[in-house]
Length: 117
Length: 107
Image 1 (tube, rainbow over the protein chains, first blue to last red):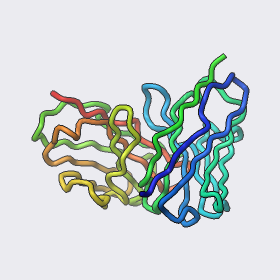
Image 2: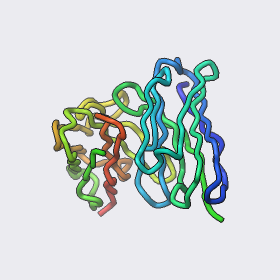
Image 3: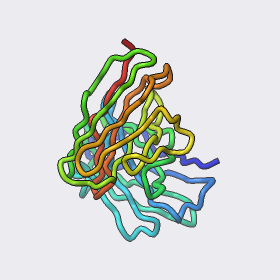
Image 4: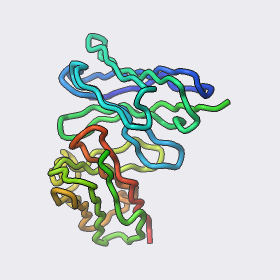
């Protein structure tokens, strides 16, 4: 079964850091770009970041640029999102998603990040 | 960043109705647009890629059209399982951007 599973969410204080992880299985992980998408409580989807198969090209939403860093470890089938200088408005469910070159075809169940003092 | 404007933001419809949702891009994105369905408490589901290509396993009552800046998602005959929120997503250039979402509710 093709799937991705996120972990690493939790409660963090404003200004602190958190690292999210995503493990892919059932597909050749290093063949695909990978993405992070988030959804604040009661709000719509927001694209956060993406990384190409070899990590050579990355992209970020303006709202996280300079604070979040996406990376991957292909031998471990793993995707990461390092989040620094967290803000209350970063509170959301964070989804990892696989890019099949035409869109995001496989999504995880999400991991919840809560930023609060 | 490219802005995606969806309309309507919500609609009420009955089973069997034909429903159309539109998405407008702030600049030409060719056919680099996807549609996603999300039900409460669930991850989004990929419906349509490249503006009009139905993903495997998605019922044929779903269809997409458009290119350039104007796009639409049509459900030809709404079924009970189609009540959900629908999002467009441009994948033309980073940063990718979603539309605000359209909630399809029971009339």
